[in-house]
Length: 95
Figure 1 (cartoon, one colour):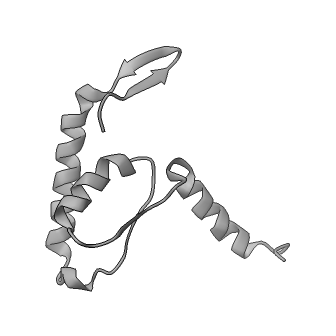
Figure 2 (figure 1 turned 90 degrees about the vertical axis):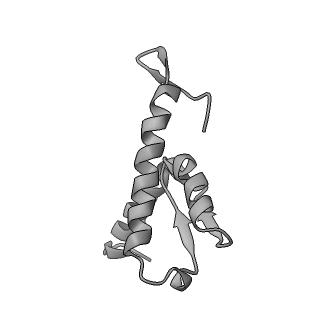
């Protein structure tokens, strides 16, 4: 993820300056996750959702070589859609 800007209050902000910090946090998080997994061969599916997928994806590919990584197409709305689906499943008006 490079050359990204963020528009806030009508002003473009360069977020590239924050990428080294974000990358180090992601690297540490993935290392910790891998330390907690007793047998990585038990992982058959990896599903990556959310707006930060672009940051996590290269690190997951690096550490989990050869395993398919499924990336949600509606990244920014995946949590909302998930909560909606859960709520809908409890709706008394559900068909």
